[in-house]
Image 1: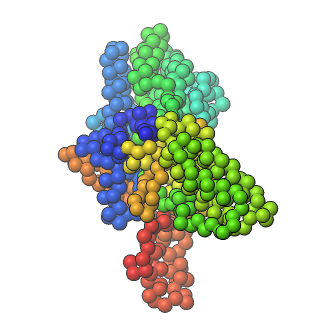
Image 2: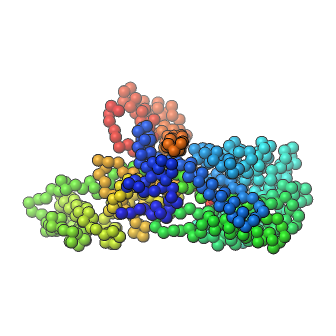
Image 3: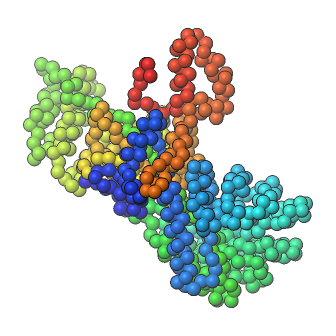
Length: 601
Ligand SMILES: *Cc1c(COP(=O)(O)O)cnc(C)c1O
């Protein structure tokens, strides 16, 4: 048996019971039951299931952990948080997040004009908005308008020029000024592959000289009351807590120094995001708990405040991955298993066969449990030799086909006879006996971080979880790109079941895909987003709150600026009306593959 590392990555959000992957909440429905229900409504292809209750759990955990630590340390500042929109801006994710975060005044962080417009439109008025990233005068003016609308907004400046622009906008308009934050360029860097967000050579933030200049500029323009926040962000997915501690000391002292210089309204430290999520199905890669993270933050800031004789600052966080990753599961149907096509009835032995083929046939017939490993090994060796013989012209295509069929049958038989729980025997052969699973999805669209930065995601079939998976699996997506593959990796092996797709469906779940994947995903080969479903529980009963169908072929083409009427006009040429009508129906389907097709459908 194999639990696909669920004890490492699932945080009890999902469990295995009765051989099925289930949602560990309310009535504990199985994922497969939800998939079937959605597909019965004629939504085919891959699905993105979103679970707002998981986002809600993360928000609750974040606030309660920090608030518990605040109590324990008798800390005088408050805890506040915002969700960084760049991690997931889609309405089906953001709207429930805002609704669920209302009781905590959970806010939003924006890093571009479009994200700021989302925040200005949907954020609860009492909840904070923070604005990071490079800003032009128009974006700064948007910040003033947000303030005018009644939002609690802080513009965090990345450079002195942004501060100068804020002063200009204030003078040129009669609007009152939003709060101002200073992003500090830390001497200490982060950890992990995103470490370049922090550190002295980082793209963002002010050096200590610039911080002093900024403070003087603010003071001479009588704007001290607006300077409220110090901000840093050391990078995403911190796997260790040590860089955070260093960054906290640095930023904490900058806060205290500015307070002592006279920045009387400065009372917030924003520690950015970076809380990691466990993506590995093999071994833990995050080496701290949220509790440890929170107490380190509070302890360090308390210590510095005491040392420098200033008030303990309110704490802001902008963790995004931690809040959103676990909430979304990508579910994709397996379309085909490649070697299972080799059926024993395809074997077409001749009267006279080359000796190696005769031998393969004997291995297949006489294999026993005891000899299975040895025979399988021999068969793989023979296959190599037979391929060479074919290249040299000594055997023909029929011989080669017979070899293929026999070797696959031998491997299948051997695997079914091996009773090695730890797969040690299998592992030695993984490279040779792997099965290719063709999956109805696009890696470029749905797992862009796998393609771009080798990000690992937990993968688990939705069913058969009470059976031993025996095939070492490579996953192929349906794009025409050889990068659209999750190859078998013997260091992190994925084993799947040997299923007969003519008899049953087999679905794979890709977990923790709720952070960054949605809008990073690209339409390579013109595969658009999968059909999205918000799965909610009302009085313990599972319901679909909203379904956003995958784009139709025509919508996709229109998105890349083709004119639908021009396309239709061209397609009509040389076709009779009935054929064109069928064609037009296809234009209104999505571009993922279908397993059922009938002419009259
Ligand atoms: C990306 C980003 C975040 C979110 O980081 P996570 O690792 O997803 O928590 C927070 N703050 C800023 C400024 C960011 O750029």
